[in-house]
Image 1 (cartoon, rainbow, N blue to C red):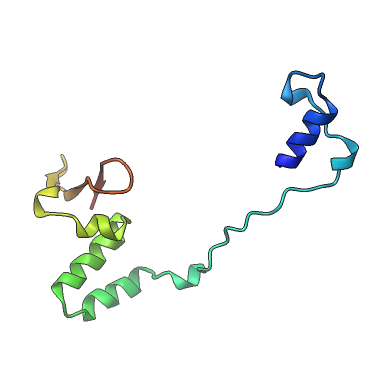
Image 2: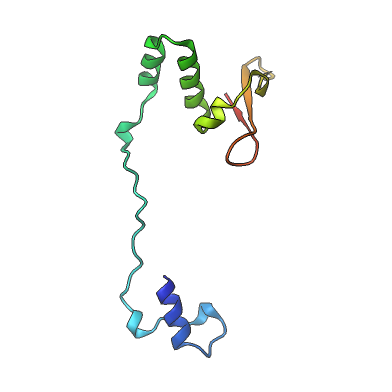
Length: 117
């Protein structure tokens, strides 16, 4: 991509608008390299809802069950979950009587945000 931009500038130096520059013959047929960011994980490697339920059923530690359930629901980074305090969780009730919780994440990699549980 950078070489193409350079050769377009070199061969069309009298054209001030970069969008109107044409690709020179020496660069015709040269493609961009494919992105190398291929995930090593397959969709079959991810747990589905039944596997999460089985883990929660047989996990003996309340602390581990809580962490696993919150990590699954929030999709937050591990250090964001571990830095949570009880006062960061706000319980709310909707107009139709459904109760849910919102979690305020402040010490994360991105700006502070609120995530529903």
